[in-house]
Length: 88
Image 1 (spheres, rainbow, N blue to C red):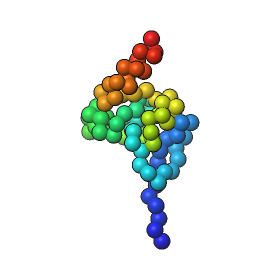
Image 2 (image 1 turned 90 degrees about the vertical axis):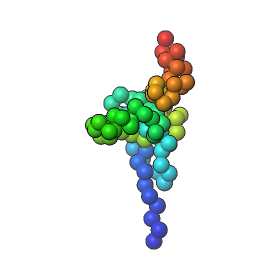
Image 3 (image 1 turned 135 degrees about the vertical axis):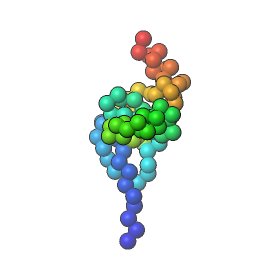
Image 4 (image 1 turned 30 degrees about the vertical axis):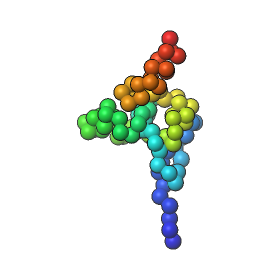
């Protein structure tokens, strides 16, 4: 029996669900920030420890935004600038 792998992703409602495909964005549940999986700031935080406990994953950017997360200023500077301008 060939069993598919399950990746736990966060939906637009903030609830976790099982996906047959990995997410393409990661986020931090407490700070409500999302970014690329290779983000320098996130990788540094993971290396220091503590960050992984609150990490979530999203299938796409639209889902992260719908769940109330904002773009990371380090790895998504254009999206962050747009978000920041919309806040003012």
